[in-house]
Length: 188
Image 1 (cartoon, one colour):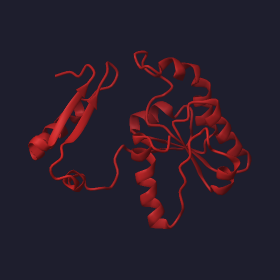
Image 2: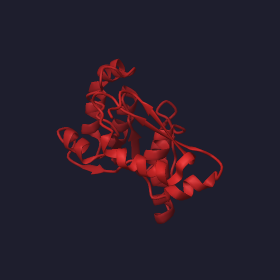
Image 3: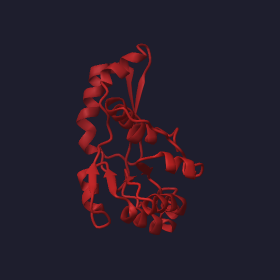
Image 4: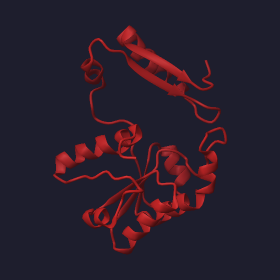
């Protein structure tokens, strides 16, 4: 999903920074519209969260012609909590997800913990945290009169207590310009 927020956070912003630095070109294409012309154009193919047979087929086609594939995973998508609306879809697509990790030349994940959990599927893994090299204060100042909303989501399997101190600092630094929205069963 080229226009999705997660694509922007995990791929577009960091890869655009790299492309400017080393002088390469980027194309963002959805799985359903990716064609042979896109695969022929690319030197490296990055598949983000591909959890389908379509994504696996793309990776296998690339592998067959010697194009490196990077599989970008930001969650433990082989163990989705059952309360998530797409839990059944991920259970159904578990084979393509696991096979994708095995077919890919490299895996990128968000945390060292996730890298450890997925090392049984891939030999080559890098940790790329969910942030990018842009000054957050400058972003907040772009809309001087606006409010920045921080959405914090948690579940019975996802902890957020480790970011509490950062949330308090953001709120105290920007006062009314920061609004924190809590989603899910967040502990005290």
